[in-house]
Length: 112
Image 1 (cartoon, rainbow, N blue to C red):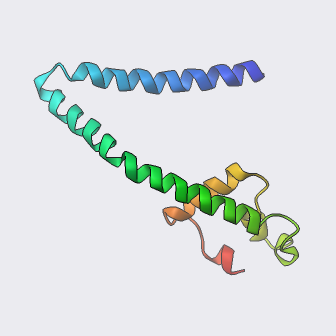
Image 2 (cartoon, rainbow, N blue to C red):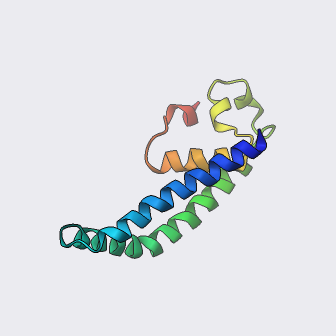
């Protein structure tokens, strides 16, 4: 089962990379070449912003993980909101912080 999960992960990454390589071949055509160059330029221009965003995301995720870890807020553990705020892993806390970044998080859960 573990080998299958690992193989599926490699296949999914390879699939994405193959489609990106298809964009490289689209550079040869006049109709699509300009659009592909624009997409690559936008991605390269976004690199510094995304790097800063990643640093802030990791910083806030670690802060939320430490602040809302189990046992620290006993009053929230039995609450239905506590199960979504208090996360068991850093990865789930990063996902919660990413959702909060785009406004996809109910503020009523934090208010209690």
